[in-house]
Image 1 (cartoon, rainbow, N blue to C red):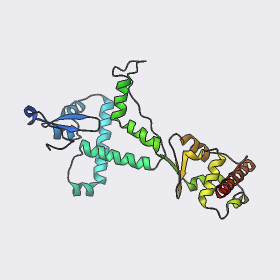
Image 2 (cartoon, helix red, strand yellow):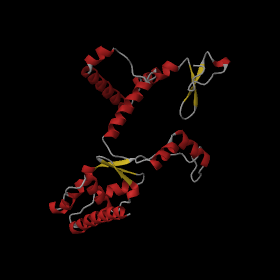
Image 3 (cartoon, rainbow, N blue to C red):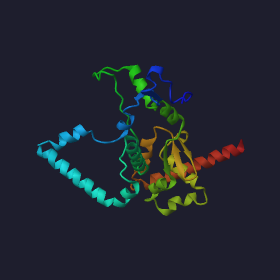
Image 4 (cartoon, rainbow, N blue to C red):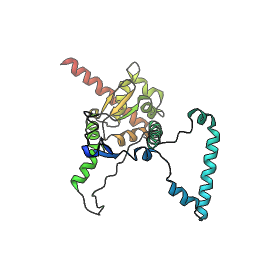
Amino acid sequence: HDRDFYFPKTHPKDKRDKFWVKHFAGKVQYTVGTWIVKNNDSVPDRFKDAIDGCSNQVIIDAQAADISTKAAATAASGTTRRRTGLKKPTVASTFMSSMRSLKKDLSESNCSFIRCIKPNAAMESGVFDDMYVVEQLRALGLLQTCEVLKVGLPTRITYAELRATLSDMPPEALSIFEGEPEQVLIAAILWAFDVDPAMYRLGRTRVFFRAGQISKVQEILHADLSGRKDWFVGRLQEALAAREAGQNAASAA
């Protein structure tokens, strides 16, 4: 690995015992002797002995419940265990399993995220260390994320979701869009809600919004139009008229 970017050179005197790995956040030095031990996601023997010798009834009950749960899980997965042997989970395998579970949860939801940043190393109230904060943002990749969000279209919803906002509209309200591409109706809905055309792009089946438009999207999806049908139909008609006027102006030019 002498020329590998992610494995920086180790000082000759440390080569037998240590090595470096360049992670995204920076270089980290690892010790060879405890590398495998630390990667095993197992409870230290001293901790087990302390728990086994504990006389606190709460701890005893919790340990009994844990043993019962593990026994049931072992019985339920007996076939799998026979296939895979008695392989113990490692820190890496546990992390990957956690990431797969997180990915599954995220794929089933529509969420935003909040990243907490420490204002200063001493955790003092009212003290904001600019460089300390910037280093955290850089290490977490948030600076690059902000650049992507600034030029990208991170929020997206399907045409079907937008059409659902018209469920209370009378059928004749949509007859004015008969024969028009679906994008025309979707653009009219967004126009009716005063969404700036520069803030979104129309795809084949979805609308892609620029960063910062989540609140507007939520407003549209949860709008109650039951008492404003005439107003909304009028807005759709205005949107269609504005489109036709734009097309006529372009043709005249």
